[in-house]
Image (cartoon, rainbow, N blue to C red):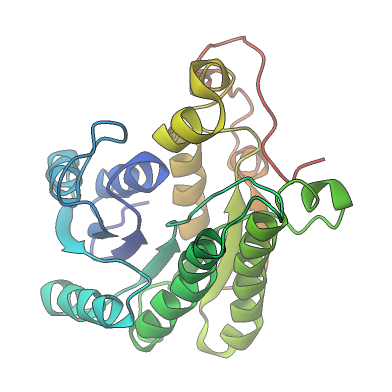
Length: 272
């Protein structure tokens, strides 16, 4: 399916999963609003909104790079307005930006707690809120939030309760919007990977090269997103796993996504 004339607002799209999604949809002709903070490259992370925009256009899409810290409502509003002025509307919102800190209660400073809540929960809410007037008029409008199924097993709370509840809040927002916005034919879903994904965050914050070698590439998420965004408004209210989405699309061999084909894979957080 072509994404010609569909405009996608993606938070955190300068690198990693967000950029992989942007490039996949750009290759189908989409307009991409790259809403992220990075305007100067951090050698540990790579990529800026401008380098991502250049890659989007090389892939066949149209790009708008907008510097946005989603903790700042005024910046969100300005980015939405710039996107609408350039492309005429917004059809899809992908809430990808997220902060992570896997520490317990005693080891989580207030500023890190606030960072996770201000980005993961408040930022996700405000981005969607500001895009909503345009989604109501959109072409097969979707909200897609990168967050996990809610698993109340205490082992997902104990080691990093602040992070866990922030991510579960994102999933609850996605489910709330599925119900609230059904009357506008706006689909809302959450999506989460079955395994860890090879990104700079995974390498630098979670497990280095050893974890990267047990991970899949971001392209598996991008392929799942492409399938989800082709579905009608009735495809809504789901907490989806990338593997399950791709199986529904007829893909059963996932070896091509592995950093080390045939190697051991690390199950992602929150999945039993």
